[in-house]
Image 1 (cartoon, one colour):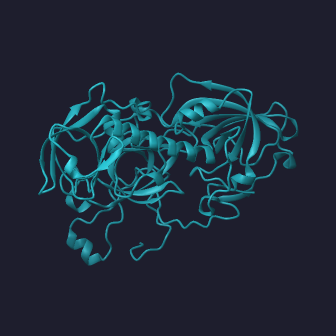
Image 2: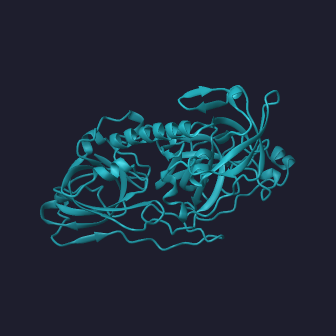
Image 3: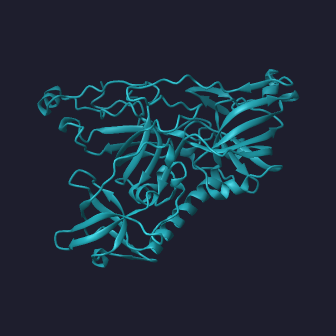
Length: 435
């Protein structure tokens, strides 16, 4: 099996062949030194979780996505802090391996989020650290140079710690939108942000780590949303249309075209508690099925080497795991470990998975952003080169399916998926506007 680490392809071979493991030897990941940025945001690394409250909050609309490599592009919201020549420029990002995604109040993956969905995100600096994006000072300058700006000024914040849609964002904060006026002819819905009642509140796993996030900008007061014939209105177990909207309803919504013309156009509206609960349950189950077939991601913290290439591995599971998975991992139970990359892609999991024995499962009372707080020790009869401190792995509980994944998801024998999105502003794919 081939293993790529930071762009280098190496053979994932048993360490016994190299004679590396020795009894009582312990290898641990050294946390990299913190590197501050102009606003105090540290550079995020794969090997260490970032400090709480340091991520930079940015909202925008998802305009492009490479879900296999967990990368995408946002069109950041227009704000008063951004001049008109800097508006609507692409914000490239890559999910951190421990980054979380939420949709409809439930855990999700990037492939679950429709293009055009307005998202709230929390970002850290990427591998280049802070860099200044040169912007054209006028439209005329951009025109005569025939070289349009390729990045938003926020491009240095290119590693995403967390993304969530408007539904999740409002449900997490226990707020709803109360309809005060509707113009069916003009397609305008006027609503006011209100605190949700006890019956209206939707439990969501997005709340768990929210205390470690910087507050994000929110819509407040009275807002006038657009809607049209494509707007989906969810009521109970049915799908309605704009004719089902009425004054006095208390809604959760998702938007698109946000901040281009006011607060945006409504793509989906949930008019009652039952429809919101069912939507969240459907998305949660979709995440569980995806998780079972690929495994729960985590980071290797340390290795206690034993004789003959065996040893005990300590790993911390990432926060992006379901309640079902937390219950599935038990001490003295068997499972499977799969070598993965920071993108969470594996090489050929149907053949590469190694059987292990889980020994200890410890749960911390508090955890860093991106961490589940669950630390596991598992025994491996034969170490692989890909099992190293700081590396990413996927873990499966006994009985979980391990199918051959679609070809574009796996890295063995080589990666056939083109890189069309880059995270840090260094273009890797030639375009007509490449500098």
